[in-house]
Length: 235
Image (cartoon, rainbow, N blue to C red; front, side, top):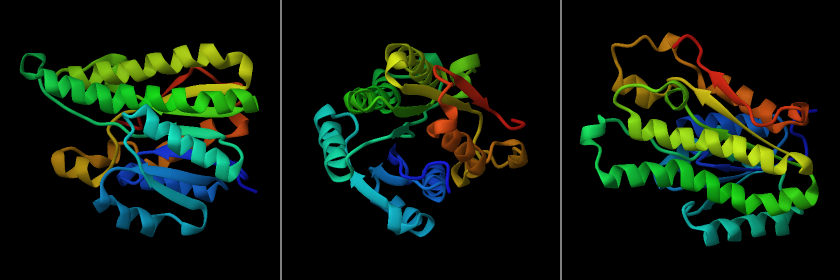
């Protein structure tokens, strides 16, 4: 038996380089997943990596509460329950404070904070009614310790960390847990291309992140809520 047998999991942004590894791990652990995506070009890699027998995909605008509500309603109508929300969707941006324009700040806020908040808001009524649920977010190391040249990204990911702790306090009495991981640099093709002189052996592997996320989504993590878990490897 898998640790997520019988669970229905909504995974936002689950078709990218990290997302497809995480999605495959959730399916391998026994979950049925509903994965949101934006870019069509990511679908072939996702479909090749994730068993089609226990996955569904949905193209959803995650900054629209109405669109998210419609998706959640469809999941509950089809499956009868929703057990896990994994907020993988997000974005990155770099640049000094003096060169970060308002549009970039708004973009990162929408991709990182707004999507996580709206998805959490949409699933909580179902999870509270069920008296069970797991919400898992992804923040970042710069959100916890800072870092030059990534201020806008860091403060929006810090917002995700704050959301994690606040939501955990709100739902503590309802059988719902809310946690987050804070990865360092992830070993993806894009990061290898962007940083060719850095040794990727020091970076955290997508599979290592996936294992932590599967645990936080499982019944075994029932006693853990409001945690921000560093996943740094040797980076």
